[in-house]
Structures are given as structure tokens and as C-alpha cells.
Image (cartoon, rainbow, N blue to C red; front, side, top):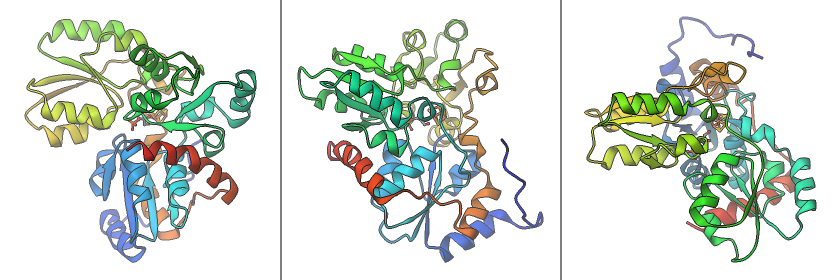
Length: 321
Ligand code: 13P
Ligand code: SF4
């Protein structure tokens, strides 16, 4: 459901107003690479989910963290740095993965597999994290899986695509929760293959949330930050970018001489209107950022006991470096 139109004077210079408020509020603005370009440009720190979790944990001088991303990311910021006021521009900025694995469903899955070690992708709620042994992101997932005690079977969720990729890479036995990202699962292998044929000099780089038959076409697979690093350091000049297209903004700035082609998607309009933009990430706007800083709402709040339980698997992950 779209949020009500924010009550803002239309003549207000939003960039100037946000700038004034961020100083008045002693706010640190964190933004994910899938945010709109204007939001990426005004952030104090841009990053993938792991980098932003670390930035939130290490925020010392700030009194407020404004998290321009989705709910599970802002919740993670609150868990790792509970003394801060954490606000998010739109409380309804969710995530299809987080929705697909609620805590009670995970509890029931664990009860059927009591000997398994539970590795959960960071794209899940605080309550689901609290049921997990360790958390991972797409940047550190391989390292996290390799750190699971040898011989211990693994329950991995909520992303079956990332899970299948990791099982193949590490050879570990993993039961996978049947979740998927509504954006990455719309990418069309057929159309990517056709695009590769038309651009034989382009490399296809993909996020591990993509389906297996899409990843099979990839020249490089990595988290959003790893894809960005790859484009910067690689000797090539042309890339088909297999992730949410918000990243293209920072990629273009980081490697202006390179050609970037957004990935073609399948028109499965039931999910995400068949697009390569995350409708949750795109809920955040400059108007909502201004209001969040002005009103310090909406805030991320949770019971201290839940935060404490969710912090354990997150800190286990962060301790791996
Ligand atoms: P990373 O930010 O870890 O690459 O993950 C992408 C994602 O799921 C953001 O929604
Ligand atoms: Fe969730 Fe996919 Fe959107 Fe990331 S891109 S927030 S995984 S729905």
C-alpha cells in the first residue's frame, strides 16, 4: 500500500533541508546500493548489507542512524548498536526473503532437524535471526559456511538460490528453505544468453540471489560490493550487470569509461511488475528522508530481550571478520 503523501511545502529545497537536519540531529545516513541515485549521493556511507551493518555497529559520534535500505537492514543496525535512535524513511520497505521465513516457521523446521546448524541469510527479521546459530550476507556467506563445524549438517534460509550456490561451492550438506528474492528471480537466462551473444566482449556478472540457471551463465558472481569491485579492477570494458539496477549509478561513477548493461528480466508481472528494481528499496524518497530526520520517525524498536538473542548470531558472523 503506498504511504500517504507527506505534508511538505513543495517549495522546500529538500537537499538543503536534509543537510541542515542531519547536522542538527547528529545523524549518520547509511544507504544501500539499490537506493535511488540522489539517496546514494547524499549518504555518509554507501554499502552492501555487510558493510552497512559494520558502519552501524561502529557509529560512535552519531545520535541517530538514518537507514536508507529495507527494514531488516535497519533492524540489524538497531541490534548491533542498540543505544542509537534508528530511523528508516518507510517502515513498509520490506523484503520478499524476510517475509518468506517467519520465526515460527523456522522454529518448526529446526524441530524437525534438531542436529542441524542454522545459518540464516541476513535478509530475515530479528525474530528469525534470534532462532539462528549464525547469520551471513552474500559477501561472507562462503566463509561462514566453511566455519560451520565439519560434519554438522546445515539448515540454510531463507534464500534457496544463495543456498544452492553455497552448497555447490563448499560441498557441504545443506537443507534449503524455499525462499527467493522477488527481483533476482525475474532475471531471464534466455534473454541474458541472447544478450551475451550480441555482446561477445561483455562479461556477465551476477548476484548469488539469482537462480542457478542464470548463475551458470555468469563470468563472475558476488555481492553488490564484490560486483562493484570487480568492475573497477577488471581489465575488461563491458558488463551485463545481474543485480538490482540501483548499483549501476555507483558503478558508473567508479568506472566512467566502462559500459554497463542492465540485466534483462522475464515479464512475470505477479512479482515486482517484472522489473529489475526492488519495489521495497524504491519506497524510500527524499521527502521521506526529510520527514524521518525532522520527526525522528518511523523508528526501529524491539524488545531488549529479542535484540539480545538476535545479536548473538550476528556477532558470531561479525567476529569472522
Ligand atoms: P548485498 O547487499 O549483501 O549484496 O545483498 C543484496 C540484497 O539482498 C539487498 O537487498
Ligand atoms: Fe529483498 Fe530482493 Fe529487495 Fe533485496 S532486492 S531487499 S533481497 S526483495
